[in-house]
Image (tube, protein in one colour):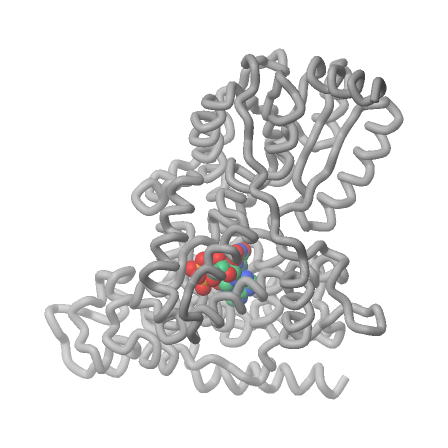
Length: 482
Ligand SMILES: Cc1cc2nc3c(=O)[nH]c(=O)nc-3n(C[C@H](O)[C@H](O)[C@H](O)COP(=O)(O)OP(=O)(O)OC[C@H]3O[C@@H](n4cnc5c(N)ncnc54)[C@H](O)[C@@H]3O)c2cc1C
């Protein structure tokens, strides 16, 4: 009893650090809840790791800047300062932090191998220095090593993975509310005060994002609630059509933890009539779990093909094609619309992600790694697990992947999922005068309409679909024979 009292007194006197990572929220934030309930002086620290952002993740710099600003406002109500530290690596950041005395530190897990590795090393250092710490479950339903086959090996196929994962999660105790408590007084832990603006990217292309997104917990919750109230029932029918605003668009909020997946699950569970839309949506959360499980069981897939036969694939290097793809100038409207939507809004519809990715790897024969890099730079919702798994799925070299020989026809995909051309016209205004029946194949238009001139106003296709398809199938045959 006496020891307990001493411990509580010591916890109260010590500064509690909440290490903010991808968890910019108050709701269901285990580490933040714990620290605020056990320490009277709390500081929140975000470490901007420069090496993660050098020539990559430009779009996300803006999201983080906004998240810091909005989260700081929220934390003020709890007497907590959100302090920013900029460092080359976490190692160098913690070298400085560990020089400061009298603190305990708490954080939620991120399910990426490099983060989990770092946690392990930091744990040892903290133990050596007798610094109290606690690591909490992160933004996931099941822990990274929980879902396995009966023989203990990891799943590589989605359906059995998700059947098992879902039943494990359902059997768990209902997660706690994890309320955050107002602390006694506000403190500053770090000596330097760094302006959040320092992490904005140099190019100001991010300014356009302001028209589409508000990176805050309130906004994430509003979007989630609106989706569950009004859209989830039709999600099964609408989710594949980029011309309909039928998906949730919660992805960046999930990637940065403004939303918590257990909370989403709980909200979905409260739906009284659980129809097809509900099931489909829950399955998508399942794909997110599957990607995270894959990269932790097979961390090599972050850099290499999961299916080794693809190591011999004759990828082409073609800067001109790659640039045309990035700029949305391939001459295939559905591909170009997607790439322009990405550049302008930092997000792209899932169906169009599949079409654009397939075009890069199958029509242009460019290695999926180039596409993964570009998405990483431009997506606000980028996360290692979903991006790498998504690319490898499309390329055919991942787990439970689309077979390589299933090559998306960009014309038919456009006609099927954007039948009136509403989506392509939104992102490629220069083709808006083209009639519906030619909108996905403007090169078939024989006469000039409203002065529209192919080759001048919009490019001719950079490759011929039929020929590209055959070349891709030939290349695939070669790796099959080897
Ligand atoms: C080539 C490629 C790259 C991708 N890169 C990313 C990425 O970096 N970050 C990312 O979050 N998603 C990625 N995805 C998956 C998917 O496209 C997005 O999650 C989805 O479009 C986000 O929009 P939404 O929130 O409206 O999704 P909804 O359809 O409303 O789905 C709800 C949530 O489920 C999850 N989800 C949905 N589809 C998938 C999927 N196929 N795989 C894994 N999780 C999924 C996401 O967290 C999403 O927010 C990628 C897909 C492909 C094909």
